[in-house]
Image (cartoon, rainbow, N blue to C red; front, side, top):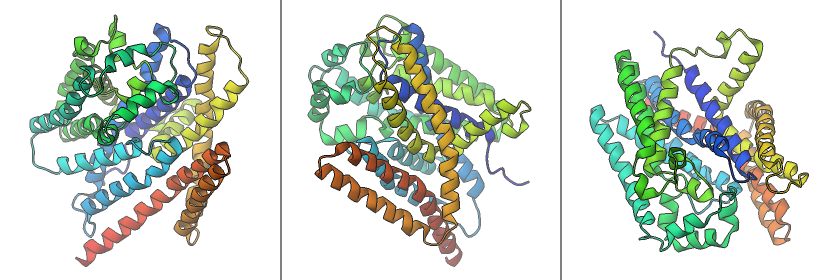
Length: 439
């Protein structure tokens, strides 16, 4: 029996995670102090990262499932070289996001999936994998506790408490305290422990891979995994509450208030709650969702197909979604002149809805352009020249003190990365297929 090439529930849920990610970025950019319902919705949007990384662990296993023992193909070499290419080429996205001194999502995915791929190739039993996952997370937890105890950055707790409830996602970047905090951290600490550090994001990938392997080997493990994820979800908000000072409510224990919390979100309450929810969501869809083609309602079919496309083309989505967020939201807010508390919350959600609509319209077109141009000769060279020209434009316009146009050129570098990476993977696949056949 032929092994399936895609699992629709994985693509669909990954697409949902992409949509939540975009919505969260767009809404948080100009949102005032959130009410309790807004906190719940924002937490749902922030749940996008854990879902995405959890399902990326399942993609590790589907790759292994399709390629294990395939004659003439050096699967491990291909996978690790592809991860290395994603890690380094992903800095094109970092340039666009101004995150060159930290790990962004592509470096986090590359490091985490490569590590989990190697770990899942070992003969360790599942319980031993649990211990390895705990050991990985303990590295981050030790850092986070020491930071909370003011041992890494004196006055960190006072700094965190000084961030106002109406601070938007850019407050950390704009403010003096944000720059001071980042500059005070040693470069290695700033690089390895902020944002997409592998020391807790890999845990989501790891458990996605472990869950997939167990339930695919035997459906009887589904209930055990469901109970495990439910226990994480329920107990998460209580985990180490006294250490991290979450506030008065259980919602505050997992809610990310501002950009500082987003950069340091790997506290136990957040990791446990979102990991539990990601696992339960996957198990709820597994075997029940059979793909967009199986739906009868026209609009549901169209929407599900769009989500599946976002899941399959998540790299293209991540690049295009930032373009949509940085175009749609600033344009909309330039026409708005709301005083505090006067309708801004509703307009924050409108920003998210319009940015999502723009992205769902744009991604299929970018994918079609990429696939059509890939059929033409010298595609890789032409894209590389486009990326090089975008780099030149960045430097020229910043030297001419036209920073807005220079920043616009960074989107060219990022889009070029989305267009060239699939070609790089194809070249690596041919190389390691030929190498394995020759060997």
